[in-house]
Length: 396
Image 1: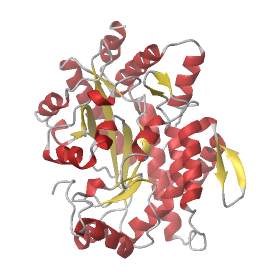
Image 2 (image 1 turned 45 degrees about the vertical axis):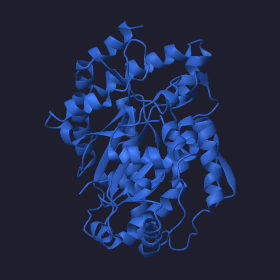
Image 3 (image 1 turned 135 degrees about the vertical axis):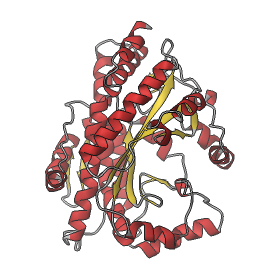
């Protein structure tokens, strides 16, 4: 079954009933660049065809709307260590493939100056249908992100875990913020990617509370019957039950410049999903009211605007706290899940947005900062192939 298919909801329920708790899947998106000019190049069809000849990449490389983007997927893993190992192998193979085809790969939430009007939509029935259905919205989305799937057993449980994860999305975005540039300028935002994607796509951003599988299934069936969606991937919410995999998928985060940052963030996301399920199972959420949409949206805006340099609102405690303090509370809360699943989260002292702003203040230009970021991506994602970083630097 294609993961684009929209199954009957009774069949999707069975997918979740037979799912396994806390399996892990990682999806990382990369921009495809000319290594000399750093311009986006529409080379996905070529790379994808070549990836099909690699026994590992054949089932792991995928397209994501525009022809200057490629995604790599770890596949299902039983542990965080296995997920990291699987993804590391796929990263190395993908970066080696890119080098052999004379292109570089970048991992930020946006391209600092590429014009979305120049981007081509992948020529497949799925993406051409999106182009037709969404018009300008589809063309505008030249953004890159990190998605993490965590297995959740039980359909009702998956919906309730997704419901409770809504209020964790702003701090996860703040941690991941890595897209300050747009149109060759500092946008003033920590994550302009989020403003582009979640504010333009339909069925995107923070979903409502559904409360139960039956309520969720009724809504999806209505969308299907009345022609709003024909594929499960048209549900672009920042957290969603994944119909084909029996997972809860978290989709709020910017792509990360370094492989270590991406791995640490994937570990944190996994721990947040797992701890939410544990709290739900142990009854700790029974007497707590979920936050209102407008409360989550207030914190989401703060994350978009300021990232880890901002402050978050604890609406239940009627207090404001530094985003960094909110992260420390998140780490403390997830400690049981991280211990049980063997997850280590080694986040750097600065995220991408903070690092780029520091470099701007030091006098670096937009292109200089982006070239260094592309080199860092090549060095840290390619693993055993550091000459990728040397190639980009040599083009300077």
